[in-house]
Length: 390
Image (cartoon, rainbow, N blue to C red; front, side):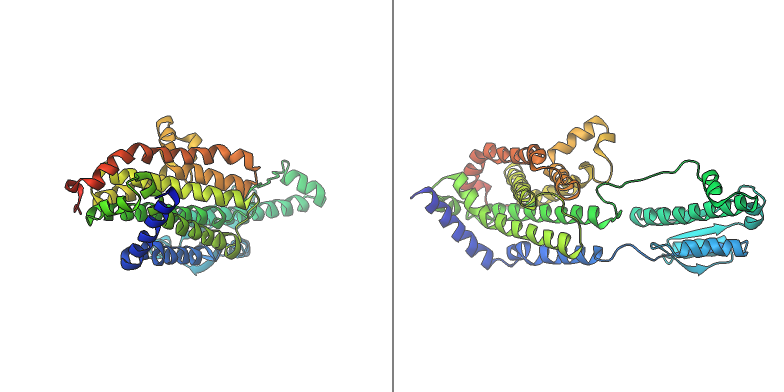
């Protein structure tokens, strides 16, 4: 029997196995669908109107003007007016308020007298995203208020508006955000979480597909369907999960680029091909876990841990260039590191295709791992002592 016939026979057999096993079918369909719906709903609305508490101990027209400027920002909503710091702290501990803005007594007098006027913002520090939005908007409002107050003082001294502006802001900071000008967290965080979801299901599905053959004692039948060729058996078995996961990658693109409006400035087809390389690289690692541990439950546990660690070492939350050298090197054992680099380059930066080919090649190198493990996997398929383990 030829190559194509062997792979087709294994593929048909795998299709019947998927149809008969609810857990297998759920891994391929229901659970990814739920995950993508959750992330879509999580990021479909921007982070706006975060409730904070205001402690205005000065209670003057000037302090009320500052408070109204802070409240007018997109990300902040002054929902609570408190009379003391303990009340504001209680609201933060209860999760009703993300921060407390304190305008001290004597604020207007200090400002009009030319002395330093201090405004304090206390935030919880628990959620990095909300803290970033709060600090950005409050600082922007306070900075605008400060410049406005200084302009009024200088004009009151007889300076023209242009002269007052030159003295109030002698150095103008001209900022240009190149790749995420809206400073939208969805453009950066949503792809990270969705790609993590994709890789976790690719790993779990592969371990279940291969490991269940050994657990159920059907591995020899699987190998016979491939004409005794282990690599044909692997290709036929993983063809269906690979295509399904790639289609879920298409769903991920729809959620990101259509529903959430995340920009795609580079070549979408190259990103789609990189997604296929991303999926098969994690499937290759998952096959190795089955061979190494000879136990489906242990392989699933290790595979889950390996998948989650991808996030920490990828440089997504902490820049790779600032990591200790051993940590930076360790990031290369996770295909996720290369995939996120490709995503940022293609989707956000819009670089030419040639610049991402190296990272695609690095992901494809992971396909060499199961090739080295296939002889042992074949032995496990024909030797009954490896069967029946949970």
